[in-house]
Image 1 (cartoon, rainbow, N blue to C red):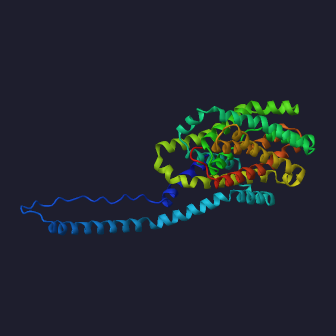
Image 2: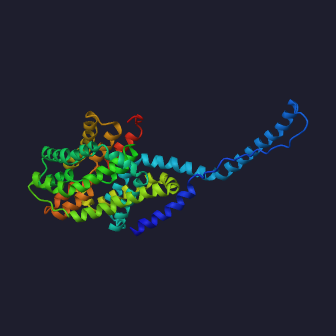
Image 3: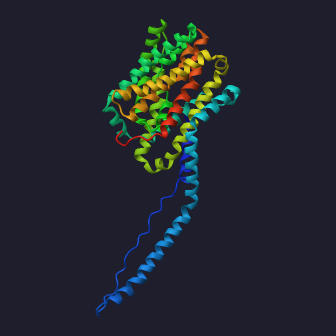
Length: 391
């Protein structure tokens, strides 16, 4: 967290350096003329007004030219950055594939990304979303709990059942089937908040849904695994709660507080938020993949396809079911991404710690890649599909 705080401090002056400066418009003050005892004729009025108008016009032009000269370099640099950042954000799926390929080809590339950096990257991801939010956003969301309840049922109702059916349909052995069900039974991933932001969804709603399913995982994940597999998955409830506060809630709260009390700083940093989110997500995916590169490469298409379908079909159902039951476009997009993108890294950890069969962790490792690709693809597609103002 110290490294993350240091990086955040460095980001502030950088943002101010590249953000376009705000130059106030020149203010012209009228100067009273001496009172003449003789009557003023029209020609006299024109003669007296003309020089003042010309002087004012000339002063305005000189002031504007000076302002343009002052901000031209910064504005041009910022404009180039904005265009580059938009292009980079749009290519989010490509970066995911590239980082995954590097992690599979040479896992040692990401050995530097230790647990401390992993935690800092998650916190940076959450902070980049937090500065886009205000407390009022959450107040508005809590007025409609039906959205959260709908997504919760998709996460812990539809997804575990879909994972079980896909595993059976593709004839997966017991260990792989257990891993599939575990992936379907875990909470929504934090990267969904970034993808929701890119897809023009409701970020506050996404954060609230992620938090709800993360807290719900304390009870729902072991319950579902015991019910569907006959095996209990121990969950460190205190540990999950602590991690949720540190990695999700605290950075978001800091971002929202900064947005409220330091709006000028946030306004300068805000254009950098999507880039920070994309970089953080790519590093998180690559790090997770690098740790289990061998089992991912060893997994055949018989496992790759059902894992891909789990996230893809989950996203499709997560969009159309809310849409057909009366939810608007923005909420439907948000629920689709939240349903599709599971916290696969958490699933891998649970399988590693609590499943005796080594092969049970492989579905989670494969899921890390397909989850990120599916969610990012949905986000980029929706980014270019406009949303009606009333939705």
